[in-house]
Amino acid sequence: MRLASYNTEWFNALFDDAGRMLVDNELSARYKTTRRQQLAALGTVFRAMDACAVMVIEAPDTNGKRSTVTALETFAAANSLRARRAVIGFASETEQEIALLYDPDALSVVHDPQGEPAPSHGAPGAPRFDSQLRVDLNGDGDEDLVRFSKPPLELAVTTTAGHALRLIGVHAKSKAPHGAGSEKEFTRISIENRRKQLAECLWLRARIDRQLEAGDSLIVMGDFNDGPGLDEYEKLFGHSGVEIVIGTNRPAHQRLYDPHAVLALTQTLGLTPTTARFWQPQRKHYFEALLDFIMISPDLVAAKPDWRIWHPFNDPAVTAVPDLADALLSASDHFPVTLDLEL
Image (cartoon, rainbow, N blue to C red):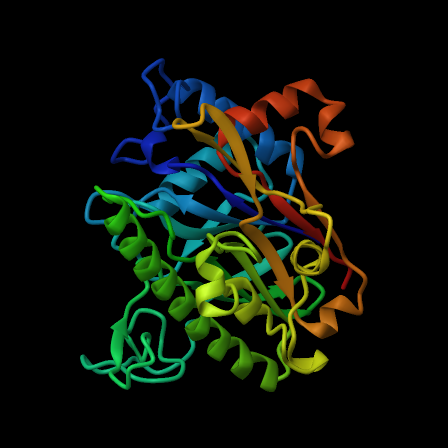
């Protein structure tokens, strides 16, 4: 079974309100890329992955006029994907949803949110992800209310062979200081965003604790907008959100595992895998980061699964196929991560 996590940059901009693909030469939301080019590139990448299920981050929007499911299933049909059925959980307040595109011949999938809905004044611990978390973010004794802008997608999955899995799709708070007009504002917004991102990860970790205690086979996957050592504000808070979610300081049976996260946490020579590539206009060059993960519970680690980052420069099997490497660069500013797992 192959599972994938893929942040498809502004997928929503490639569809009209009826969920039809905009195969034209108008510019997409991706820099200097037409909608026709981005759709073709995404099709190439999805076909090459040939996954049983893809956790789509930045999936098309769901609102009163638009449907994530309709858009994704239209895309799957146009590209003859076996992962052709889509499911979404709680819609976000943004135009970027979290959805799973999956093969109904291989998997049975149900949106299955956990936790109790919190009252209007929030709740501590692990309320349902469309609620509000009450937590002291500043360490000042006053509790704050935290709400996910993109509620994690909780799924109950059963394979055709009868294996039960719990999947959680994640798109954590961005730490980018958008709207900063001065250095002081930059610092303030950066710290506020980091604090919100860590709160989301604490909330997610509380849910993970409950799933592991219940003995579930758990997979947590998506874009965490964070990674060990990614920015200077990590020193201020003592750890990254990824370390919180994995449970770095917990006993082995309570830790999730992702080999790329482990490498980033333990390396000493700056050798870190990357899953995203961004253009920095001030310096006029690209920089890369490790933002996307597929973390699994200890029982699944025992099955000796195989992880892969579909990086157009760093994966020789991808580099050897120029059309695929070019498609990965045109499709998104993130590269897919896949997990091959035998159950």
